Image 1 (spheres, rainbow, N blue to C red):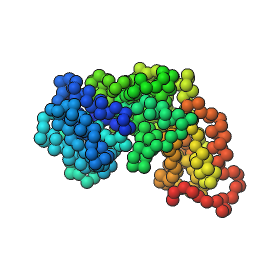
Image 2: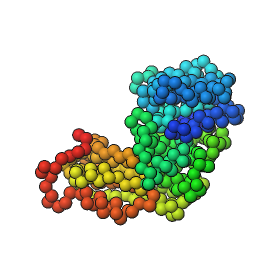
Image 3: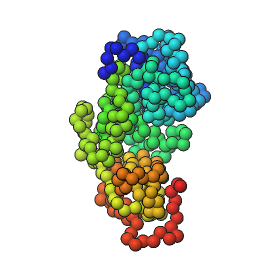
Image 4: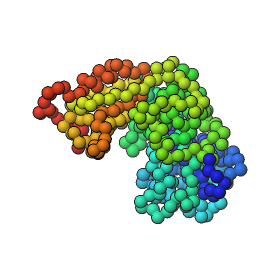
Length: 367
């Protein structure tokens, strides 16, 4: 927790997919702020900010800053800094809550408050202190999106799938609300929590209905630590060989019941471009998350990256290997009821065979 000598305004950022319950949570905080005076910034990618209007309707005396027609994780980062600075100049408040749009990535928003932006003259750390990153998860939506039998590929806007949005927001946060818990069966809830814990072992987790959580659970927690938040992502900790379940948090550990598992695939051999591409096109529904680095035949100096969330799969070059890099393929898989042996066999079948020629082989990956 930050000492009393720090007089900067603490900030809580709320992320979560569309309809997860962020606006409901904001209204709860405004009705029960404790001894705080809260200001709110609401972002919406549309040209009409419905969430801001709903908050103002329920809290007539509360000043709400509306940032519409763009996203504060990219195009509106400068506007976000300008607006919160103007708000601090014009009004007296001692806590700032930022409700991000449903398609926002949390990492760029955190960077905006901790490092500023290249095109803005404002140093946000002089006035503000990022205190807590909160992610609100639509438990029912998560359950359906990652159900192997469903294979939905709905877009969340901006060309990104719901799966990508869910995973981004879960992997980078301090507090996680599994909201709408009343909309799924108990066994499904246990499975969702087990999967979420593999993706994000660090965050404090609450099961909620209608975003009903104590105010102190999301305000003035002192939990934010940028480096720790990035390092604590499940796939990174698995790649580092760390145990993601350190017993720091009180949560149900249902992995054994629901066969939520993780494994790392490693090899020194490169993948055959066409065979790997075909394998990626026929993605398995039992893998919730896969991420890591791989070697591709024909590109010995290129670091290739794989990032998968549910039905959304992306693979391509990340840069070049450094001289000291461990030039091995290392891919982490997190999923439910995965057949690890079968996945390993399939990946082994994608490797370049000894003395195999690549003449005439097409490389389908981006240049």
